[in-house]
Structures are given as C-alpha cells and as structure tokens.
Amino acid sequence: MRKMRKELFFIGMLVIASLFAGCSKDKEENPLIGTWESDIVTETFYGRSSSQNIKGLETFTFYADKKVKYSATQPQPYTLEGTYTTQGSSISMTFSIPGSEQSFVYGPGQTFEISLVTGESTLAEVTEQTYLVNGNNLTIESTADVEFSSMKTTYAVKTVYKRIED
Image 1 (cartoon, rainbow, N blue to C red):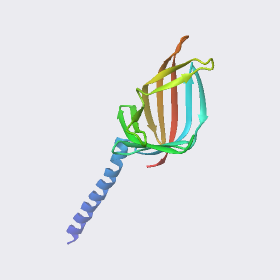
Image 2: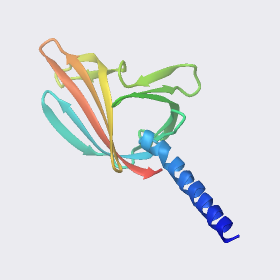
Image 3: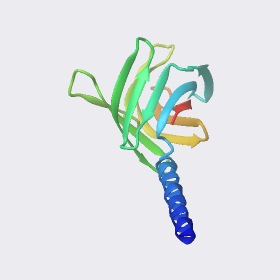
Image 4: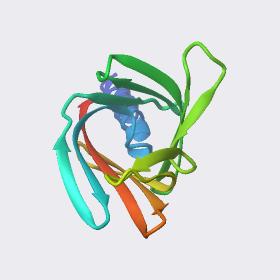
C-alpha cells in the first residue's frame, strides 16, 4: 500500500511537471506571443538618427495561431487584425482593412512616400523587416532603400516595444 502511494505520488509529480513544461514550450518556440506596447522609435535617414518617445501609442498582440492584432491611439483610436509570418529573424504582417476586402502588408514589399524639405518626394519600399525579442523588449526594425534625384540612401525605423501581457 505504501509502495503504491509512492508510485502514485511519483506519477502525479511527472504529470504536473509535464504540464508546466508544455505551457512554457509555446512561449519558448515563439517568443512573440503576448501583448507589446510601443516605447521608443528611432528613425535613421541620410545617416542621421532621431528618437521619439511613443510610449503607449500602439500595441501588437501576437497569438500562437499566427494571428496578430494591432491597435493605435492616434490620430484616432483604431484596431487592425491580420496574420504574421516569421522566418529566422524576419517578420511580415498582413492586415485586413475593416469594411473592405482589401489588405496591406507591414513588412517587406510595403511601400510608403518619403518627402524632403525641398518638396521632392519619392516612393520607398521596405526591403527588410526584422524582429528581436530580448527579455521583455521587442524590437522591430524596417529598412528601405530610397532614391531621390540627387542621392541614394537607406531609411530605417527601429521601434522598441515593452511586453505588457503574456
């Protein structure tokens, strides 16, 4: 009887240990899972960098099923839902536009307009977007090659997010 209790206790401990190991496995395999709030953004253009505090202006929530939710508070509050893919340290997200059947990419292939103070503007395309999770910090960095009539340069945006929820 005593031997049976020890065996049952041992089996119970194994079951509990495997449950805890199973819970942390998803997070270890995909460190993005959770909710991340914006903190600081740094833009680098023509070799000059400037940083801005954007604490709490946007959040990303990444789910284990490769879905993502993005929320922003400016210029007015809105939320987008979509999916994300990762390969190594590269990340790309595709969001649906509410009320339409259209979507857009946030990552490689995304285009945006850049204007100079001279009035000249050009379209740029994100060539690379990477992420790095370091403890409770998520850094997403996008780079684009930009060509104006007078010069070629690289434009980079690096945003740091803080984990606010697992």
